[in-house]
Length: 419
Image (spheres, rainbow, N blue to C red):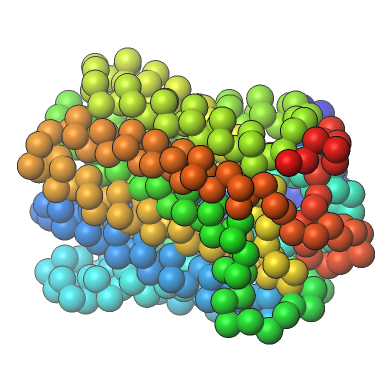
């Protein structure tokens, strides 16, 4: 599959867009980690740290679909770069004011989250125009999921390294400066400057008028909840073992597992409806979270974290296809942004729940929240089988400037197998 990814990246603009998007998303990928570490370094409790991270996640959740709809209507450069700058300024304000003024701290992280640019949805809107062929676009979704796990592996280590060499406040500043640079790289590229969304039906619900998309979002709210709880539980586990660096290793192991799982997933051409496959992947993801509650010693815990991450990237890559199949025409960036939003809301709720669970119970209780979230995500998919079995209409990928392929199939997927 490495050769296949290399071929995709040799396509004009592909490597730049992927790299710029990953770098630009560094603040949103590691922001909650940096917020938790900064709040703890300032003397805040787990509950406060979790609450601040939750506000950041909730604000991101609110901002993503709004900014995504703005991108669909106004284009990428006019929305994404200003948003990235304002978001970075919000996080810089938090780094300077600390937690002495809680109101100002909450306002600062809310601004940082609200203006997080929808780079993730924007990239998936650009792939069809850059790669042209449907099979290559679907392969790019898998490559995207794998590549972002590299960021999720390296990002936590980068944050903890900056914290150890400089300070937690310095980590907040550095990751956001890097994020603005990544967003700038994307929006000045030709595909981003020339991209326009397909015509859309005027409707106040936008992408949310799709029942299948709503079902998917409901499931991934709980996947986000599981990951959000692991963020706080991981800090508590590191504190229990007296080493701050343990947290970075745990998060890196989780990302490494997802990277390996995503690489395997992308190496195959899958048959059958992606909705059916997604139920299997999320079920395996839920099972992987359960052993974390045993909280063994550090080496074993890192192994468990890696195993827990194996099915995350495949679940995300498959979810991208399902979003594509169910999003109404002309709402591609908004639809993908809603996925980011529900994921972020779930993560915010997870961080908010895990803090009290740890303080009133134990670190194991914090990790137990992840298992509950995983099985709740599976339950939503099982309850909405009939809704997800009906994708939207088929359109020609080469005839649209956006990723608007409701009846599209994955590589190797024959249409006669669709449910």
